[in-house]
Image (cartoon, rainbow, N blue to C red; front, side, top):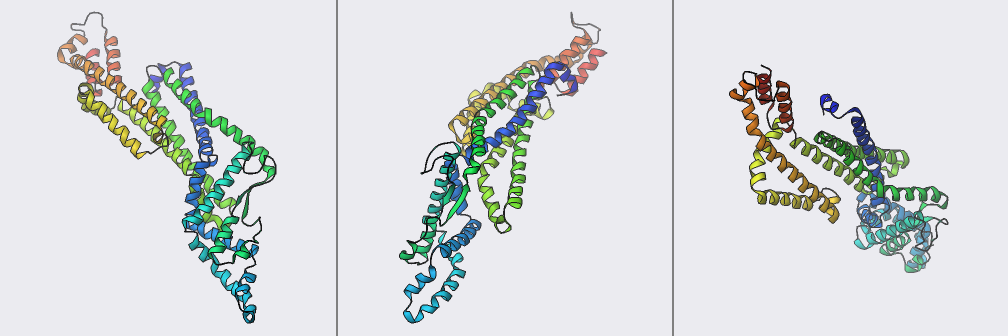
Length: 433
């Protein structure tokens, strides 16, 4: 929107529109973060799906194999178990055999971890630990613990036993595996209070922030009466910027978490896990770019540029006279987008309904614009022709229309895209001659 056009809005409305857009953009970024926490970190189904991807990652399998091997040899008397199978005269070889086995066990466990059965053991343990964690954070009871006491752990003891059994460790030795084998602490009781407050805030914010953003953007467009296309374009750019910021923050925070908080030997696996756990954040960022770009392109299509006018003129005959083809084409585009599913909303029934409704509204608005331009063009051409030119020049002025009024009318036609800049300049010169 040019400064001249903004002046037509009035200072108060300009300030209100800019304030709404800037605040809505900041809140939209915060909404994206809370939405990610809600949909990824606090949703057990999403966590279970992420766990399935994590355990299938070779880097994770390699690191987990080393951990399980250490747990197996620490918690189980492997040397004694090996000695039980040796003849009495070979008992002294039990210790050296254990050492030889221990050096090759991690590689063997890596192979075993590729089995769907053992992967499912990990997924089940991870899902149970996550549900326990969410119950604690939401001040609920579940999985045998009560809020505020004890620790939240992921129990991999079943995996230790499964690995031991696959490696041939006697069942008598595996029965002696202590209950704390394979226990990984996720949260201790002294961390619960702050975490519970944060989760309560996220539950509230994720439900209302997005609605607030939509209302603020809509109010900015409503206030810009007469200049709504320009404000809608700015809203589109704002949403696109939010999407880019989400992707940038995902990258920067990931680098900080991996390089600053993860031990050197676990950084590669940490990178793989971070990519899985922030997959939905990436989808949210891409959705912001996708929807923002659609708004920008839609506003540009309705604008006065030469390319926009050429496109509107090209599609006007079909859009205005062959409604069946127009609506059928829009339906095909919607179905293709639903099949592609580039955003979460386009994979849900409510998102498809909302997006379809907005597409229909945009199609109706574009048709109204092309119809108005079709009616205005003959008048514009007549205004730029030699005969009306003489009248506009004052030789034979039209009753009740001054040159200033004629120029104002031409400005209006130019803004609507009904005449080209060249036609405007010719008619303006005639009006001032």
